[in-house]
Length: 202
View 1 (cartoon, rainbow, N blue to C red):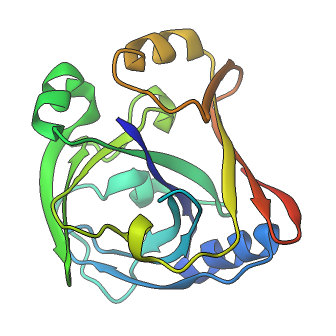
View 2: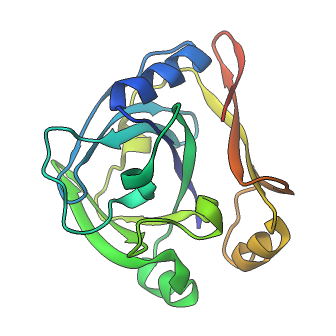
View 3: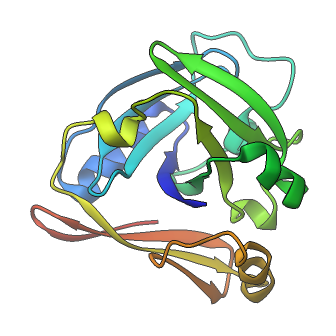
């Protein structure tokens, strides 16, 4: 499993996108709707096949009869980095090894098709610091198709009181050196190089 994208959540999609634009100095592109979970996003292409999404509940979509992903049903406050998403070529096998990642849900939007592991509670383990797992079932995922923004992710810091246990849990599969673990309050922090210098998303 390797890092695929990071998600900034907001009480609204525009607020989340505005937060990213203010920190990085670049505008996001329109994304789309996730009908299954009643959410929508805007997107930003990063270097090396990564991307960023600003995500929120979609006020025009009916509320699903089950929890939304990324804990968005309970999200309040200022926009912030809430989720890191790792891709795999074998989500069935990986979720057998990491059952706490959740149940596999098949999703699609336009030409995009993917499967994602989502906990039935909507909340990822380790206070949301556990990665969401994704497998792309289409030839060109967003990280390969979004225009370059001039932004590059340098490090993703995963802080948690039980960071050592989280790191050990993921160590057999996680191969991305940009992901760093440290002991502290539960939060994510991404350091990016941008056209105007360094930017830090929290």
